[in-house]
Length: 464
Image (cartoon, rainbow, N blue to C red; front, top):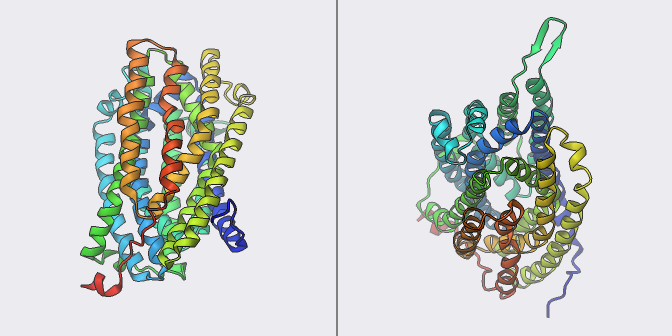
């Protein structure tokens, strides 16, 4: 019989060793978003609305790109359990091809069809005018982030999580400094050191930091790393078997990423077209604070995925079961912590977001209260179901997300907002309600343990 908490001290030690650097990395990344959010908010509601709307396409693309890096991670962690480095390098190359191709598509749409892209999310002329310049600049990051995500995923898969922290820290410090300098401008008397660029300055700062981030990562991966020792030509290697496996297990993850990105984008569109301009700003504030306080739980989830995938690759199914039960309890406890922390942020919203109108601040507090409740469910079900990916059952996760998004979340929110003209906070609550509903699915599916599968192949099969 399995126990609530595993007694294996090595498990907790490894979980912390992996989770802490990932947590710091995510915290730094989220802090960048918070710094962007706060600085842009000081320019007023129009600037926030423009940047937020422009980032809806950005977030859609980034979510799909994360699906690609997640696909790489699922396979690589299990091959790491077998210590099959050659297959890991080949999978990295496969992931990079998909990421680069998708980045080019996103860049083309955002850079050459900017106004059309913005009109997909809002009809407000002021918001569109404010977001055009921002989107054109930020679109260049689409060519960079996918490469970064895949390479970091490979490093994480072999338990080398510190490089992700290092590059994110460097990029974060640079981004915050450049944000301030380029949004507000820096002068010494009549000499202009940095021009005042408004919200476009935030986009320029992000682009520069992404370039520096990828440069540092290249130096580490191709020159300094001693685990994988990847060489550029090895990323060009082709394997029909691994490509088919990547598509088999990866397409559901990428599809899930697209569904979730579509969900976020359509939710942004619903909020943007409610006829309540302050709802856009409130959604941005609440979402940024939620991302900040959930850093811990999602970092533990990422570390757990590495451990579960590796243990499955080693062939120890009973140990996997015990680990999973312990992780479920941890996710629930972290969810309660998330809700408590979100309630605490209600005190700082008026202090941090001084540039927003009173209506936007009041609605931000309403949205945060909704997330304080649904965030408990998010922590348990999202992270518990993410373990299924490590076990190779990526198809179920895709179908589950698709059902709730397409059949429940978006229809109910659209009806509430456009047909019944419900208040913005209720529409927002309906958008997040699936985070509670899915808990019933998670507790049944995860604890049946039928999803635990070793999806690796031996070298003879791969070569053949």
